[in-house]
Every structure is written in C-alpha cells, then in structure tokens.
Length: 184
Image 1 (cartoon, rainbow, N blue to C red):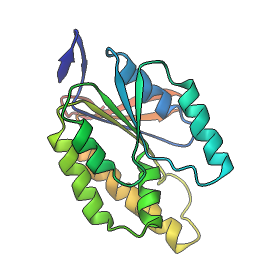
Image 2: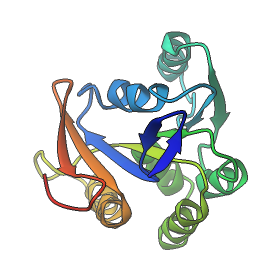
Image 3: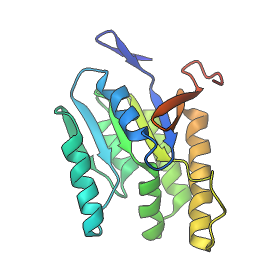
C-alpha cells in the first residue's frame, strides 16, 4: 500500500459496476479520502450534444482539487506521464476507452498490453472505473458482442493484477478481492 498522510490506497484498485450503479461516485470517494490534489483521467469524448452535457455535469459535480486530463485514446501514454508522481489517479472509464479504441480501429491487444505496462510502472495509486457489461443478455449484433467480450477480457486481466477489486450495486460496494489478494 502507498501511504500518504496516514491514509492508504492500494497501488491498483478496480471498481466495476453497471450503468448508474454508483461506481464512479464510490471511486471518487476512495480517491478524495486522500489529500488533494487528485488527478482525474477522463476517457469520454463529446461526440454529440447529450455527451457534451454529461461531461459538463460530471466536471461540475467534482470537488475542488481535481486536475482533469482527457485521454480518450492515449490512456497508457497519459498514465506513463502522470503516474511518475504520488498524487492519486482516477481513470473513468475503461469501457469508454475501449469504445474509443474499437471505433478508431486500434489494435486492442497492443493497447491492453501498454495499459498494463503503464499501470505496473506507476508510482501513484490508481483507481480504475469500468462498466460490467457481461451480466445482461447476449447482444444482437457482432460489434456489441465483440465489445462485451473485449471488456470482459480487459476486466479479467486488470482484476488479476489489481490489489483491490470492488463491484458496486445500487451504490453499495462489494469487495471482490482485498489488498491481500484474497476473495471477498
């Protein structure tokens, strides 16, 4: 664990949950329990008016003390750059990053490898937020099925290396694995 002013956050925390589950709010609370400043790596892109509004609302709701860095595609590169210093980092969210990669026809295997390398090299505690999309029905089209499968693969890879894995349901976090690596 990395200790700052008597508070701790494991080197890597993965927070999973469904849409509107409270996962982002919980992840922000984990990070803001440590002294500011905090870094918020945002992967969303404002490709339409509705998404523009969502992003603006998200920014407005954040407490003072957040430094926002946009990384819709270059998440590993951003983490390599800002992860050299101790202030904690929140990445929200991996499924938007995956969407951007897929729509940009990027090499997913290479991007996932680079992300793991950046996480391994980080000196800052990192909290990753992602949507668990594998609990519903099988999607009706090939792109959606591929997205679901790739998100599941990414989550498995990151959960295997994370010090803490949480699953948030209705605003309530459940510990899947704690910092010691045991199941919850």
